[in-house]
Structure formats: C-alpha cells, structure tokens
Length: 113
Image 1 (tube, helix red, strand yellow):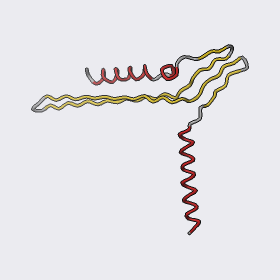
Image 2: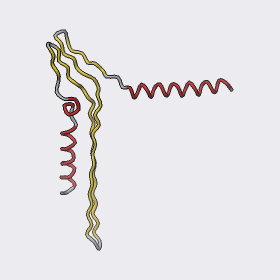
Image 3: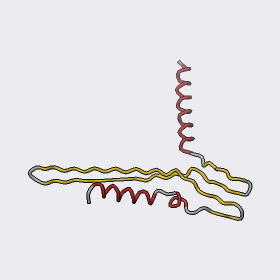
Image 4: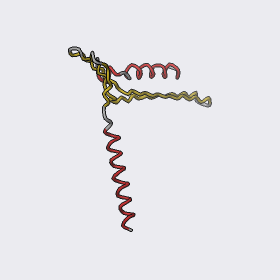
C-alpha cells in the first residue's frame, strides 16, 4: 500500500466516524416537537513515508488520525418556531473561575505589601 492509499483509507475511516449520528443518534420527535442534536466534530490525520537507497533497500511509512466530538446543543422545532438550545461548556466556566481566583489571590498578596 503506497502512502496515497494509506492516507485515503485513513481519511475514509475517520470521516465515517465523525458524524453527529454516531455521537448522538437520530433526531427525536414527540408530538409536534422535534429535537435534533448538534455536535462540534473535528478530525485530523497525517502520514509520512521514507525511502533510502543504499546498501539495503529500505522503505517506511506511517499514518495516524483522530476524531473529537463534543456536544454543542440541540435544535428544537415546534409549530411556534425553531430555537437553538446551547449546552454550557463547563470546562471553560471552570477555567475562568480558576483564573479569576488566581488573579484575585495575586492582587490580594500585592495589596498586603
């Protein structure tokens, strides 16, 4: 398998897994309300190859890839209209609180001097 085929195979495998349906499933309908899950899905891949023409005929190759999916929210569709419900990012909230605490502690220590 040459590097082009390797990267194509890797890309195809990652792309089939990087979908909202694979993360959440199908939209749900109850009565006149439909909820469609929304996710941020990202994927990346890379590869490399090498060849050395010397005493030994050497060849090399490699590849890798990854997928990350996180919930973003949901679309709620009703006869009254459609709205996007955002899911809070608790990681960012916790990081902001930690940074605020750290800055507050540093300011308090400077004020004591």
